[in-house]
Structures are given as C-alpha cells and as structure tokens.
Image 1: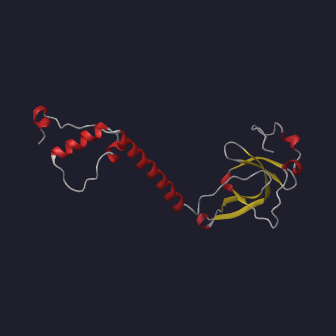
Image 2: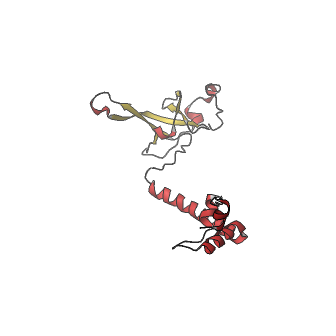
Image 3: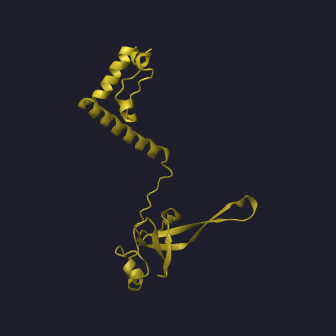
Length: 175
C-alpha cells in the first residue's frame, strides 16, 4: 500500500497526456516495484528535450507508417479524381431497379467533356455537341473515358464560353 494512500485515504493518481504516457514510459515486460514505478513517473514529469525529440520522431514515424499501411490496404479503391478541362468522361448512373432484390443497374450517361472543376470537388460537364449541363457532377460519379486517340478538347473551341458567364455561381477561370 502506498504511503500517500494510508496518510490521506485516497489513491494518488497523476494525470498524463496520453501520448506522453505512451511514448515517455519505458517498455514494461514484468511487474515493477514501487520505487521503480515512482522513478518512471518522475522521469515522465521531467520531459527531457531528448525524450521529447524521441517522442516527436516516434510519432512522425508512426504517422508515416500509418499512411503507408492505409495506401497499401486501399490501393485498389484510392483514385485520383483530378480531371482537367477537356477530358472525356463517362458519368456513372446508379439506378435502383425496383424488383427482385433491388439490384443496381449500372449504366453510364452519354460521353461528356469536363468543362470546369469547381472548388467543392464537383465538375461542370458538357455534351459532345457543346451543350453545357447546369448540373454539378460529383467526382466519384465520373469515369475516365479511354479513347482510341489521346486528343484533348480545347474547351474554348468546343463550347462558346461567352454564354457561360453568370450561368454558374463559381468563376470559370479554368476554361
């Protein structure tokens, strides 16, 4: 029984930051004595500069390892949705088929051209005849169209951008 507990009737608990408690505490492999435990707590409270530098190094290394593990685990589902203006895309359409088991009928809208990437991550698209859609399309609904030729459309030549002014709330500087 600790001396403070017998003297005051309460168990002394020191509050520590969880990260400091994890990284400034030495590795414990077996039961420790009271004096050793008191030494460990005092050592934690001192927070030497070399210990804090070691703590920072351990945390940064753990974060980068976590990023690496995340990228490895979700390698097949992580996509770069940064479509430039003039790229041909297919818009994925998930309609729920009313009927047996409410299955998804996966189909795509017609081929469209990226007009503008707006700040929220959505895109303005245009039909191949130059008609600009007023809808905003989320990035995850778009699938890159792999055409036989790698030609990109020049948006200024493809659509008349003069009628786009005021059509959208966002600026169209990317056109």
